[in-house]
Length: 64
Image (cartoon, rainbow, N blue to C red; front, side):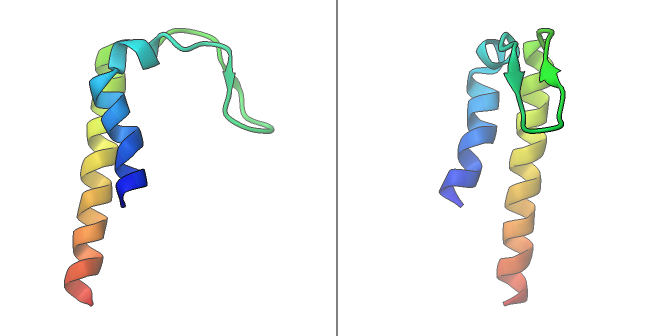
């Protein structure tokens, strides 16, 4: 759980720096990142990932 929370936290805390990353390939057959992303969008994506991950974890915890 701690490792899953790391990426969204980095997106929230360092949104401007992560938005400036270009030239990164996300894997074989996927396009490269060629343009900057506004830091606000990176932070919003981080919050969505964080809330979705925590909600799935809570749902699984309640079911067990």
